[in-house]
Amino acid sequence: MRWMLVLLFLLPSVARAGRWEDSRPLRLVQAPVVESTPRLLPDPVPVAPPVHPLWQRLLVEGGAGVGTGLAGALVGLGTYMLGSGVRLLEPGEGPTVLPFMLVGAAIGFPLGVWWGGELMAGDGSLLATLGGAAVGGLGAVGLWALSERSRPPLSGVLTGVAIPLPVVGAFLGYELSSGIRKRAKGLQLRPALVLSSRHQALVLAGCF
Image (tube, rainbow, N blue to C red; front, side, top):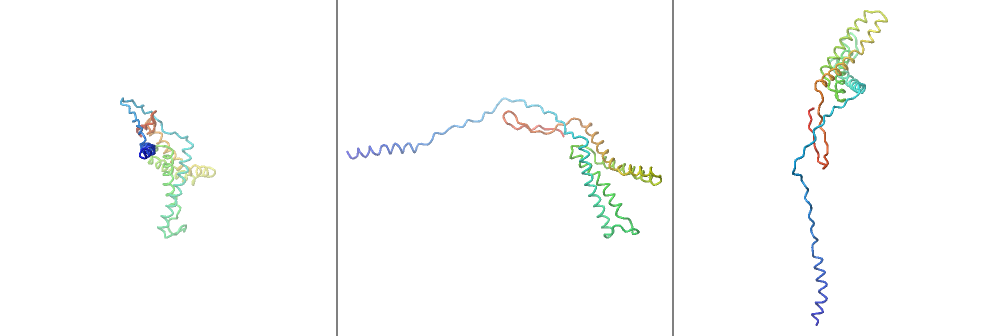
């Protein structure tokens, strides 16, 4: 009789222990469905390069040209100081510092114009930019010499026209060469990243 009572008390405990030891049923994860049939990818769409207004390009080109022109003038100043033993404006003892600074600025300004144009998605030639500045500089020298032989007010007009000629030449050299290059290349493809309907990344290759 005692053993039967003991079994009666132990049966619920054994049943509960069996429930606690049962592991939770595993859930099957559905495998991703991969389409076996090939699909045609969309054709690359030609994308034209960004076009900035002329005044924006000239503003950036001019600002960059002023910065590099000042840097070139400082390089010319440093070159003169190294060669003359830190003597600046001393007449009668060789060339003054002004020609060195002018040469440095004349080289630095067209470099800045070209750099600023490239930042604005231009495609101008550095050689054409330097050549335009050189032609403008030669014209400025000629007009300056002519103004020395002329009488007022013609001399003042010639001097005023001569001063901005190197700057105008650099702008014209870059913009004209950029337009010629863009017309020769035509429409180009730009690399782009798109997402399909199934969130798959597709990279469109382009020629640029």
